[in-house]
Amino acid sequence: MNPPQHTAHFDHLRGLAILGVLVHHVHAHIGMGIPYLNTFGGLLGVQLFFVLSGYLIADSASRHPLGTYAWHRILRIFPAYWVAYLFVGFVGRRISWDQVQSDPTSFLLNMVNLQQLDPVALIEFDVLSVSWTLTIEVLWYLLAPLVVWLGRKQPWAVLALLLPASVAWTWLASTGDLNHLFTQRFAEIQRPHTPEQFQLFVHAAFPAQVLHFGWGAMLYFHREWLARAPRWLPWALALLLLALLPFYLALTPFALLFSGLGMAAFTLAVLQLPSFEISPLAWTGKVSYSIYLLHFPIIVYGHHKFGHLGAAQLIGIGLLIAICAALMHRWVELPGMALARRITRPKPA
Image (cartoon, rainbow, N blue to C red; front, side, top):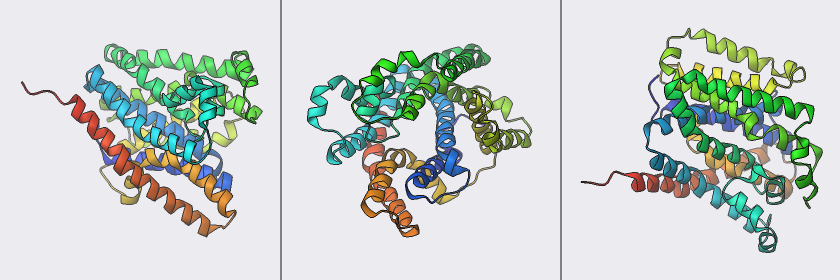
């Protein structure tokens, strides 16, 4: 497996990841879905995105100078996020200028995608319902150059660093020993919130998630060695860990770390396949970031506007998500990426 530029394998994997998230959220609001993905599609879709990011960001940080890497990351993630966040927030009346003026710090944390670091910022100013994962992504962008520096010297040291961090945080979260870090800020939240949101905030923090990026980085660092592995092995490992997730989920606090390893095995299995293209899935992967940002508000809007209309509602919401995502990809994402290339293009002598 050569270092990726923009291969169809990654587009297909992104497409599968966003479809898993979509199925989960559609089922939650409309009641239609696909067994297994209804419950686990959101979890596994996000984990797959994190594994892919671990691979691709390790590649980007390896090939580019730090300044070039930073511009590419900033202009890849922020323009589309700002458009989605500000449009849904203010046009959709999810937040107001009075609210911003009363708590500018929380609003600023949302604007720089660090809202998952503070419960008030995340919940009081939440408009997209998926932006907590973007904080995890941004923190990985900040950590990745260090991981690459370490990985060049000793790739296995990356796993030796990230695995204990995730295991320790996951264990402490399961015992409740981390709750005191966030109790006071949760008490200051004015919006209605649930104990489940508190648990999600603690259990889904960056230290718990960083191992998923680590698996992706390990796939990148060991890509040549893994290319010689038996083709059946990653498929067997992925099937074992993902199919049995409903059974071991309640048996161990580390279940989600095992499912993340399953998604890494699935990623490796797909990357080992010969070149192929499923055009609708590849297109979905190309615009997956815009779909991810916009799909939840559109699903919620359709549910409250039209109620339960069954298959007709599902088709209508799907088309609306696809159209809005295609427009934002064309007019926001692509210009942002083009601007990054112009800024970082070497100057002629």
